[in-house]
Image 1 (tube, rainbow, N blue to C red):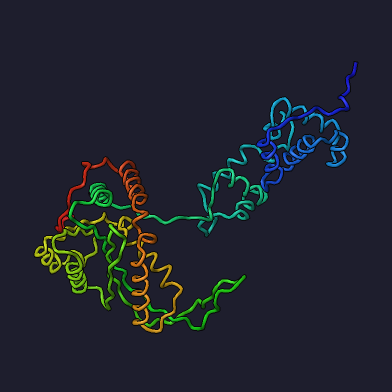
Image 2 (spheres, rainbow, N blue to C red):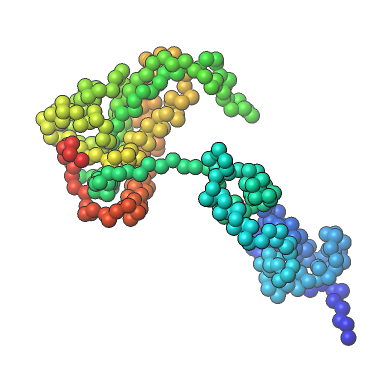
Length: 381
């Protein structure tokens, strides 16, 4: 005896969350059309429509509507994503062809070029560019992107990292931690034509070409305690200017406080005259970051703020005008450092620094003895 499907639709009861989920799947841009169609069938069934009306409205057969009513009622809404064995679109290319495309992407380069594009790979493998694109997306391969990096080769990397990060996380009593560095060769650039101001529907504009009107060097010290910055501009970048800035720091803070200074390994910081001056001023305790690790110095983050918010979009007809802009930014910064300084990001930055150091030590060498110690001003690094 041949049994026919019943004319009356099976009742489906869904929770509000399940109905919302079906609506999201149905309207999502990345949902396959067959899944979206199944969601529409179930949503109309939940709304009370009969099988014949659903089939006529969606352009499918009545048995199809009844089939998905039954599956969702018995197995839940996740069943709309399932494809029965033997059904669905058949693969146009076998697994071997797909593996050859991935292998060619990762282990070869097009002639005379540095990386593959979808169309170049499609032409080389005699497939469509959409096929290559889907395979690259599936394996998260992005030949068009690259990232820069710099691996520190400092023999005492982990020791210096622990010393500096420990200083950030647990500073000594009756002392201040200052992150000090120079931003050299800041250019006073004047645009060749006036730009258009910001307005509704249009961003501000500026010309791509410019006229150079000189440079200046900014010496800056970020106080880790409150986020305030002390800085001054000089025309040159020598040990004489560096000593002058150190003398200002010496006069800026009470004499009973020790100053723990975090700095990089630039030659000016280790010049003999600078070392002699530091020996006469023992309140300065130097902590050198590892070589090629300027990211560990928090003042570098402040330099980025300065560049993005005061210099890059500016137009300066002279060096004094550039210096005035830098001074104005520092004054505005120091008025409310708690909201804009690196202090709120300090704990997160320190945790990232520790994680970087741990990954570096595991991938390159056995870690040296743990535990940073208070650094002196010796140049033997």
